[in-house]
Image (tube, rainbow, N blue to C red; front, side, top):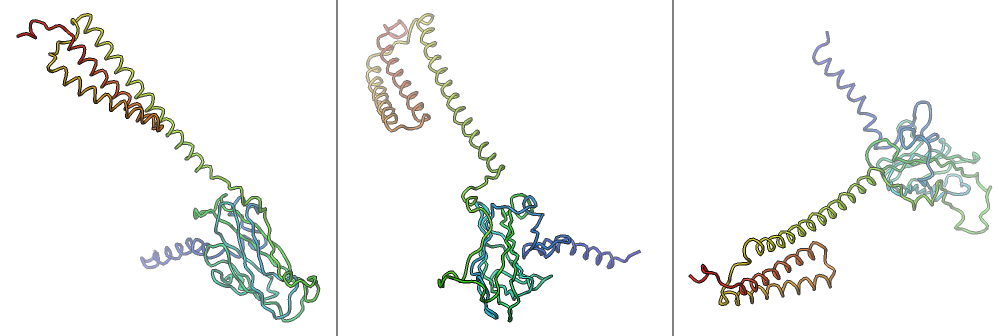
Amino acid sequence: MLSRNSRMLIFGLIALLLIAPALAMPGGPPWKSGDNLIVETGCGCHGDGAPSNSVVVSISGVPRSYTVDQSYNFTISLQHASNSEGGFMIWDYNMGSLAPGDGSQAVAEEPGAISQSAVGNDWDITWTAPSSDIGTIPFQLVGNAVNGNEAFDAGDTWNILSFSISPPDTTTNDNAENLTLRTISVGDYDALFVAVEDPAVAEAERQEELADVFFDEGNLFYFTTLSVLIVAAVIQGEFYERKFGGGPEHLDRSLAIPQGVRRSAVAAILLLMFAWSVDNENSWEVLLSLGMLSLWAIYGVYRTIAQARTPPQTKDLV
């Protein structure tokens, strides 16, 4: 049987093997996927396994033809409608010399290739031409714009750019110095202005809109129905009071006059507030509340007048 220390050592080695890919991926893509070079075939674990024109991969500062032993500064960029950052890998088949800049590094399995050392967008690297004319130099550049959810899924999009630099003294620049260097890109620039909406986000927004509609309409129907029931109850109470209760109770004029004045003032103020709210197009909640309060105050004035006009009964004279 294995000792405790041996078992711990084996478990530790297995854990390191399992987490090694996870630790390596954020610092640059792997050199190979099976028997294929990532820089030539792309990465099947991102996107739908095929290059996508929705991501524009570009490189600027590229000469039309190289000068032996001369260094050139390249800038590699990624553009996507919604994915703002990602990674890259570039290789010249070791025919020249690529040197990493900020945010990039040499690929461990192939030091002649360069990849990102951290997720980003624009990277500056240096390429030095060979010391002799060795003919046309091919380049492979792959760029991956990721959606930032830290998972390999269809939301990540990548594209491959293949280009070459001609041998010395084989191209003409029409005596225009600004045509000596060029920018090369692959992808559909029109796709940059059409963001693909995440279905989960779209569904969440739709559900939120439905919830808001149900809440607003539910409140409107509830309080409108409640208001109708209150008004109906008051009318029913008046009807039964007059038919079976002999009408409203008598209120002496010495009490009715000050009470009527107070209730009239309150009703006038509420009516003015209601009119102001209508003029300022306030929400239905405010209008309904002020309207119901105004009706209640007017009803109070009516009750005061009705009670003052009611003839006194024997019990009112005692």
